Image 1 (cartoon, rainbow, N blue to C red):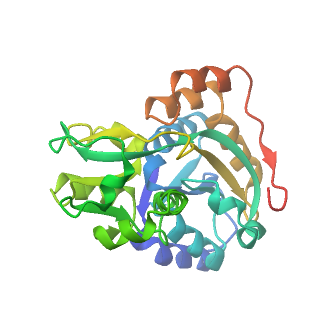
Image 2: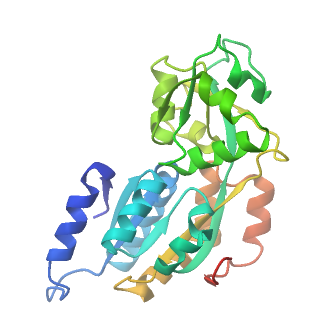
Image 3: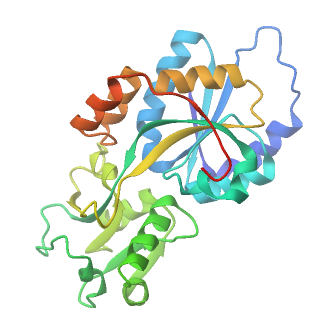
Length: 278
């Protein structure tokens, strides 16, 4: 049975994993442990449930802010697959010693997020983030992929200092950004576009697209961990998730548009071996 674990219990769970025997019981199912950024957990959960039923395996998904999970992974070195919200974590040289291979399954896009119906009549102008009349909530760059991407965008536009001075508060991840809109704390936030496609969020908020020339889409990749105890099974799941059906599942949750789905589905996605600094 699929298990989804919040990061509040992550460290305790990993310690327990380390203390348990590496030898499976005679009738024990093969297991995979997957770490996912919060934004992508819904399609991942759907695919993992299907894979469990087809293969007779057990999958545990630990969800949380991508940066927080990575720090824990580097310390504990337990698990099979890492699924962050951006390639920025894979591409850093200091992180690459724990990664093996990766495969593309979709894209994350930054968007301006407003309460449903856009009551303040805001638009795509990023200078609005400096308006003291608006309550602005952002994710911290140190904890999440959306925070890092937002910081990079603001640096590019030379707006970071002015925006950060105007922020009502910083939060830790995409889910808490949604909560800031739902609770009425934020007039405007920056989050991944796909978060507006969650069943529980659609009635609370709308997305205002940001020009892709300013904020290019970010590749979403399943990454095999070097210390995986069952690389063959992990690679099999990565192949399943990047298949035509897998890509269609990610598209349903806003991670691929129609054109991208058609292009990626035309040929099977290749699982690539990580090359240093690539």
